[in-house]
Every structure is written in structure tokens, then in C-alpha cells.
Image 1 (tube, rainbow, N blue to C red):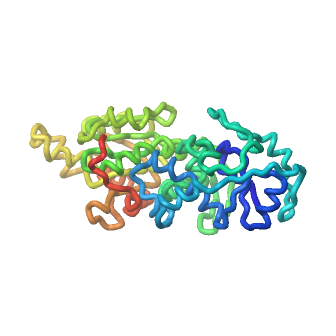
Image 2 (image 1 turned 30 degrees about the horizontal axis):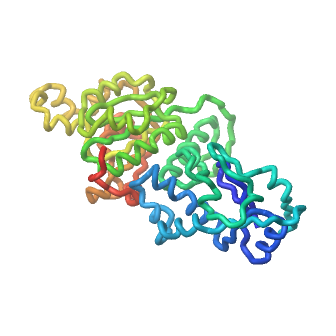
Image 3 (image 1 turned 120 degrees about the vertical axis):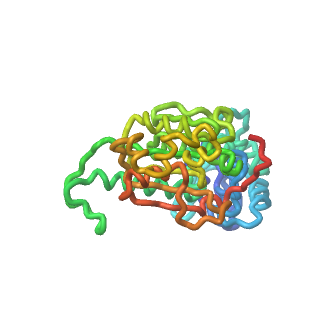
Length: 373
């Protein structure tokens, strides 16, 4: 028997019994309890599923978690009966742990925004009603802490943290052995750059999902952000990022290159640890194909014939150590090592940067181009 806990969410007290014997003990002392014989991880996922589906309607959560018939199982979990008897009070021992019904009385049924009632007044109540919406009051950051989001978010964060930690060791850090043989240099955390392409060629489901995840990704990985579509915009890590709804309104669904290139020319730093790019094959250069005013311009000619010269003029002394390409390759039949168009310039300027590729991340996100932008 254990007390249900979901991260730092404020839940009304409920104890999970995995046998009839545990249920009898809980019943005798008046502990609010449910009977659940599966894993705690599965229970948490089923309880959190409605909130996740609301925040990320395009993510195929059954694929992310590998749970068949997820919607039905989540509904079943939410309808489990929570039982609280009058009980005799006092304490109950279970697996060496003492549970005191007096503690439960103090930790009452009231939660934020609830008119609620105390557990001792309850006999049988559906789990969803008992929780009183507590699992719905959740944000993306909390979901990240609970490791409920698609794995690519956690993979980025963990790899970035590891590489940044490695950079602090000077004069003898042995990467192969993973042993610091030198001194630790506590310099400020290095800045990273995240580029998000949400232009018309990116499926709506992917664009919507990434805008919802964007603020958490940049906070977790200390990222400056470039968003590009009908317009392009730049946000420093310290800046307040508009809501996903406002970002959709600001940037629309098209493609441009002038504002994107102007952002690169005026970047506040010329050194990033990681450049993380989400997009497809489209790049600033491809926009010129449709721009008749640029056909004969020397600038376009140089960008096509001598890209290293063109980009070196735009971004002199630019450095980065890692380049991540999260390509929507699923939609184009791309190979696993596919570069996103809006980050190809990084390879021209930083040919020795370590490269990371992923085209599998979109497999759990629905295309849904009928979705209203």
C-alpha cells in the first residue's frame, strides 16, 4: 500500500492497495483507498491522459507510451471507486510503513479552486470526482518533470546538460573515461540556439505541437529562439515568449528569408554550444527560387555559387559545437541523416561541429492539416 503522488501536484489523499488484505486494513482505519493491481507508472499515465490530450491534441499518446486502447483504459482508471469507511482511527502497519488516519484528517479533501469535502464524509465516489480536477491543473514543465512527454524532449535536454557539464572541465577532462582529471571552471552556462520552422510546408499538427513545447524546450536548454514562417522573429532566453496562440497569429503560415537573415546578422552572440533546428528541407535560399526580384542579384549568385563566402560575411567568427537536425523526414521519405534547411548554414561556418539527426520524432505526432490555425 502506498500514498498516490504525482510530482508536485496537489492531490487529495488516496492510498493505493494492491491486495484484498491491504484494502481491509485501509477500510478498518478509514483511509481513502482504491484497489489497483498494476504499476504506479501506468496509473499516473492513465490519470494524466486527459490533460495531455488537451494540451497536445496531435500527439499519438498510445504510441508514445506503448499502451493499446489507451482512451478506454484511461476512462476505466478514472471511474475506479475510491472508498472511505468511518474506520476506527489510529494507525495501520503495512510492509513496515505506518499509516495514520489522523494525518489523513489533517490532509483534507480541499484543493485549490475546490469547494470539496473531507474524505471521512465519503463512502464510494468515482476516482475522477474524488480528484476533483487536480490532474487537469498541470503545465508543460510539470509534465516534463514527470517524464510523460515524448522522449525526444528528454533526449535533447539530457544530452545538452551532459555536454555543457563536460565543457566546464578544463585541462584534462577525459571524455572516454568520463573522469575529470583537471580543474572545474564554473563559467556561466553556455547559450544555445533553437530554430523552429512553422512555415506552410510543416504539417499543422507538428507546428501546433512544437509551439506548445517551445517555451519549455528553451527554458530547459537555455536557448535563444528563432521562429520562422511568413515572418521571422528572435527571442533571447531572457525575453518573455508569447503564448502559442499569439505566436500562431504573429507568424502565420508562409515562408520568407529577409527577416531570418537579418536576425542572423544581428545575433547578440557569435558562439553557441548547441544549435537545435526543427524543420524540413526549406531554407532561406529556397525562398529565392520564387522571388523574381532576386534572380539576377549578385547576392543571390554568391549565396548559390560561393555559400561559404556569403555566410562568412553575414556571420563572421560564428562558432557552435553541436548541430541538431529534427527533420520532418517522415513526410518526405528522408533518410535518417537529413539536415533541416534553416540550419544548413551552421555546417558551412562550423564544419567540425558534432552532428545529431532524428527523423523519428514526428512518428507520434499527427499531421492533421485540417486543424484550424
